[in-house]
Figure (cartoon, rainbow, N blue to C red):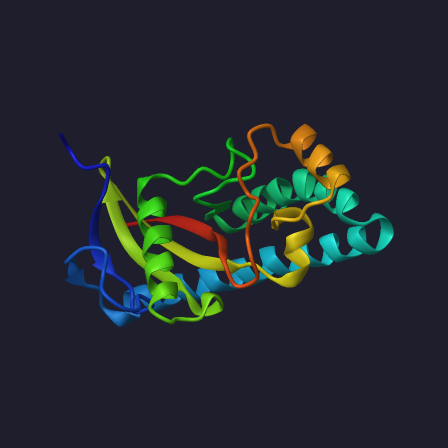
Length: 196
């Protein structure tokens, strides 16, 4: 059976043991892509956070759910169209099974993030980038963990109100993004860009 992907190079951002034993990437080749990915993540996170905060103030968690359901995919699509990157969020416990399900490479990185967290690394510092080759093409792929904060628990925690749970059930059939505690890895931003 042919592997789904092969790692041909690792960017400098990998911390701890690598996912595989690929040839090293020259720093000059990896750094610009990693910096672009980080900037896109800041845009995505900043835009979504601002809109969610406004919705929370206006109508509480149920309003935030409506914003997250409509705006998160729209923000990702807007950034993808403008930048040439594929921009998404994925999780081992996705809220939206259609858009949040990780592929095999993303699953491996998310699992490694959990191992790194268990070894004492801070969730907000967990990031990984690599040149991934498969199906005759190469991509620079980058992921950054999303930490669970106190405010996240209204919709992602263990003690979700009945009203919030009902709203989530309507908006996200099959939702698995519950039961988190502060400091857990809720998922990751995942970006990919074709390279020559």
